[in-house]
Image (cartoon, rainbow, N blue to C red; front, side):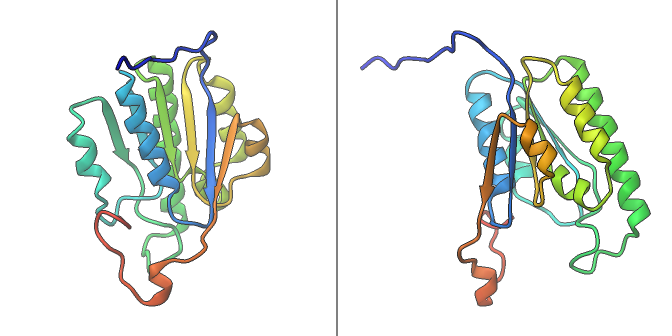
Length: 185
């Protein structure tokens, strides 16, 4: 059986927002990154608020053989789970991360950019709404941009081509079950 490969008549980059309070926002973005690699695309992932606790995607991405570049810029989630860093330090890290997004986006090397946890960073005033609008304005026409994290700003959702909201129905953690490698991190 011959497998057909679909090609759109008009190629364009999409802006995708993945938000909500359920588990799976980053996981969904990682799935799109994997799918993009399957189509021969170059992917860049910049994580805004992760970095103080190991997560399996870091080593999983290394196994993709250089098709995906991942940079973790943060010092963990600001203000929760006993994170010891002050707001000002989280903001400095987020400002460095947004500068890196501009650099990677403008390099022309990547077909897909995942800006992981930027919605949280915006909600916590680590980045400004004007900066996220500027990212959308400056995005090259054929570059896909995925923005993840809780509390996506309504103006950013309005500008996106696709918005998905992940809703928690039930979570093992709330039943006293510890986070499990490969599933939760």
